[in-house]
Length: 523
Image (tube, rainbow, N blue to C red; front, side):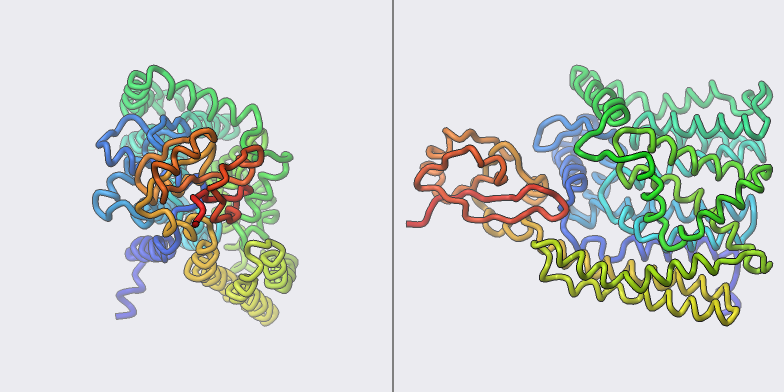
C-alpha cells in the first residue's frame, strides 16, 4: 500500500488535496468582517439576488473597485452553498490550491521533481498565502491567472506548443477580468524583459508568440463585459475603475496605504516567512546562474513585480503576492544545493532561531498593547509550535541533518498557520463590533449616518438607507425600536435628540473607526 502511495504520478493529487486542506480549514469559522471582504462578498450577494452579471453594487450603489470574475465565482458558490462566509471564500481557497498545483507541475516539467516539491513546500509554509487564500477578495484569482500566464509563456518559448499559447492568452484574459489592466501590462513587461535578457528579442520569437491571435483571445474574453458595464452605467464604472482605482492608486497614495520604496521588500520577506530568510542567498545564486533560462524567467518575474509596486504610490501587502511563486522557486533552487553540500544556511538558521525566541513575547505584548484585544494576549501561545520547531531545526542542523532541519521549519510553520486559522483568528474575530452587535439590530428598522461598517450589509442582506441628523427624531418616533449605525468621529459635531442615546460602542478591529449604535432611550 505504501509503495503504491509513494508514486510520483500521484504527487500532484497529494499536493492539491493537501493545499485544499490548508486553505479550506475553518473557512467559514470567522465572519465576513474585513473591509475588502465585506464589500466584495456583499457586492456578489447583491448581484446574485438580482440575477445581474454585469453591474456590481455595494449597498445598491455602483461599485467600481474591481472587475467581476471573483463576483462570478462567489455567485456560483452562493447558488450551491447559500450566501455565507464559507461560500464567499470557497473559490479563493480553490484558486490558492490550484496555484500551488500549477507551480509544482511547471517546475517538475521544466526543471526537476525535487525542486517542484521544495517550491510547493515553501509556498504551503507561507502564513501570508494561507491568509490570502482564506479571504473573499479578487487577489487569489489574479495570483492564479498571473502565475499561469508566466508559466505558459515560458512553456511556449521552450516547447512551441499551441496548447500553451492558448493557455497563455486565456490566462491573461481571465486575469484582466480578475483585476484589470495590470494582468496585461505586468506580464507583458516580464515577457519583454525575458526576451531582451535571453537575447531572443527578434521577429522570429515575436512571431512564435502570435501576438495578434493573443490579442483577439484576450479581447474576446475580457472586452464584452467591460463594454456592457460601460453601457449600463453610462461610463461611470469605466471612469471610476480605470482613473481612480488604477491610475489613481499607482500615481498617488490612497486610503493611507503608502510607504517608502523598501516596504514592498518587507512585504515579501514577511509574506514568504519562514523560508524568506534564505532569499538573499537565493537571489545571489540566481544572479550567478542567470544564463539558465529557467532561472532567468523566475528572477525577472519576481523582481519586476516587486519593483513595479515599489514605484506605485499606493502599497499594500497583497500587491506583491503574485511574486511569491517565482521567489519560492529561486529559494528552492538554493535549498536543493543542500544535498550537494554546497549550501551553508547556518546564519539564516541562527536568524530563525532568534526570531523564534522573541516571537511569543513579541506577540504577547503586541496584543496586550491593543486595548480592544489586551484580554486575548494568551492567544500568542497558539504560535508556540513555530519557535519550538525552529529550535528543533537548529539542533538537527548541528547534527548534520540539513534536510530534516528544513522540513521541520516548514512543517511547524504550517502547524502554526493552522492554529491561527482554527483558534486565534476566530477568537479575535468575535471581538469585532458587527459580530457583537448583530443581535441588537436583527429584525429592526436600520439606517446609517454618513458611514457604517460594510459587514452589516453582508449579514443584514438589505439596503441600508442614509439618514440626516435632522431626521433622527422623526425616525425614532416612527420606529421606536429602530437603530442608526455610525461612528464616533461622524457624531462629534452632532447634537443627538434628548430621547436618543449611543447604546453600543466598539472600536473596529484592524481599522481605526469606532462603530456605534444609536437607539431610543428606555424610559
